[in-house]
Image (cartoon, rainbow, N blue to C red; front, side, top):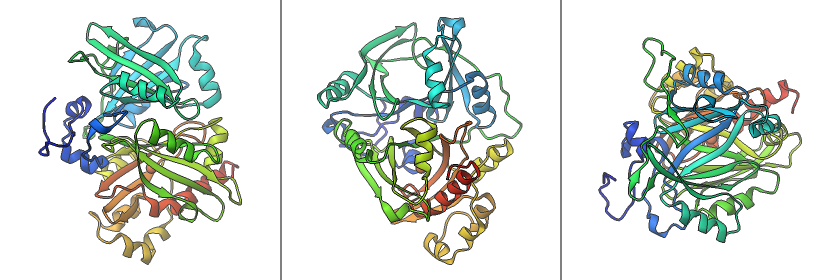
Length: 412
Ligand SMILES: [Fe+2]
């Protein structure tokens, strides 16, 4: 590994994916709030995200959507032509993050039952770790369900060591060790996948990519279960608590939720965990739990260094965002609180981009409408400027916006 850090006591190297994406540590500190930490004390060291694996109803078409609308690039493929009999899987990249889109081919595929129950969603939040066996030992000590025992899988590009543990709902964490016996796996994703190139041609003048990294993935869990899952990430995976929002912070007139955030030692991986709180009407978390048929990943926050451009490009491709009333931007209290940001507030207002500030800096963010047919998974676009928060100051405005949509769906 190349040593790019100046502080010898810390362990902060670029991952292979970040290096390939041309990102540097300074950019990552700004994009996702990367921090230095000592991996030696960590019972379950996590390097970063390996991939976000989705099960969808039609992976062939979803792969097109993520290329055409989201500017991602196809890098690998598995399917019947190459020995994967029951499903197709498309691996797409943007910056340092991979999405894997899986769809059933055979009527006997186990993906069919999963999709029938949950609809399109995230089935696997796959994490890159330096030592799979050490992680699985720790998970077993902590009583976690091991879904896949550690094994080394190989092809002509080399070997990876993988295992998987269960997390909330039917979601799993596959753990991927990409360096085995001192050799880093050189294939396009995992053994079983072949290199694939995009046939989609970007429009003239389209930016190289619309997002550079994944910032956080939010998990929605059942009422009363949030602390249990916070404990899981604390005790099993050694994650630290980042921020805490309870009760009034994020209550609207109708609904409420509670949320706590855990993060891996280097903060590359951040998991806000939400549970519904008792309120007058059905909360957005209740709606999610009903339509996803249980706990699962709610939103994925994609980090960009130019949210204005990203949002403009996405809108051109027909991506729909939640609306923010003009009153949000005209509120003198908000104007005073956010102070100076890198563009005039009018630029944010015309795009409905939200802004929040805390003691460390500010962030710009916007949320899409649900990505699929069910009111479940959606994306956030986030541009950080020092703030390591999650937009706490925007929760009320955001939830009121979600509730207007919920009401239109007849689910409020
Ligand atoms: Fe978020």
